[in-house]
Length: 401
Image: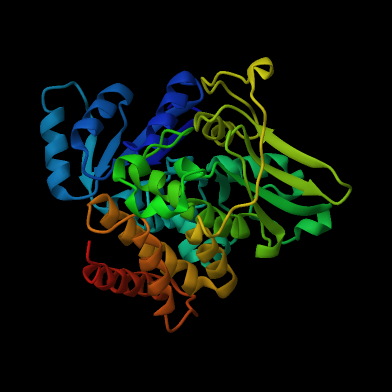
């Protein structure tokens, strides 16, 4: 084939997947879509298959795959349709593939992302749960299989860009301070409830929680942003991505979402990466790294920018952030547990089963019930995840609305 890079997009119908396809469409001389994967949105996947002509498309289950086949039956598409995690994993590791965008939301993204890592691929990591769930194991595999790991979250991509070249990537064993770095400043908007009366958070509706002031994201990530659990998960992810400790990371509230994160140096310098809040920027950066390509993003107009503001997070308002940081300090089992509990709790909130503030209660009580935080192997991690989901589900059943 004439394409420079063959790309697999895990989670193609989500916001990150669609943004990736937009960037690819703008740079067709450099990228081809080898395979697309998705959950159950067969209608949207059919549209993507017709537009981008992947060699393969994989749905989460056989029913969705059959729906996709039906949708494509009247088109000229020659895409081969498959189903299941095993098929996703196989394509992520396919010898013809150069890069894999890991954009499946939640723990479901871990196995196919690990397959890409074990095949030594260039992995563009938007699925933060992979590192939250399996940090040391994941990073060890990146090094063992000589994979390239590039962060897609706007905050981690910003940090990556602001670090010295010697620290860019997870293949280094050196510490931040060895290269003059004193601290990572992880920014967060504070979500839609930054100034809302804390006493009214228990009345937050689903629609209010998923309406982010700056970013266009999926429902789960939007709720995580509202609780700032998303920033907590990013805190844990940063620890593994940049080979640092929790004490090396500071969360800063920046409501304008223009500065995406910063790196503070020992000489007093602070380097910041700035840009409009559009995920196509970090996607384009990682796709073409170390070159730069057109992302379709409008540059900042500094003459039109409002004032920048920065504050410390209020843990009374954002107890989930504090819980995630505490889990990061405790160990792998704790972060795996918090992530699993949060996925279950957020889903229950979106289904109207529990209230907004119940999300923290479920997460905290699930973590309190954790007995063994010493998990190392993939089987141990997956079992820890399963038990945490079971515990969270049992707790949700006791909640009375």
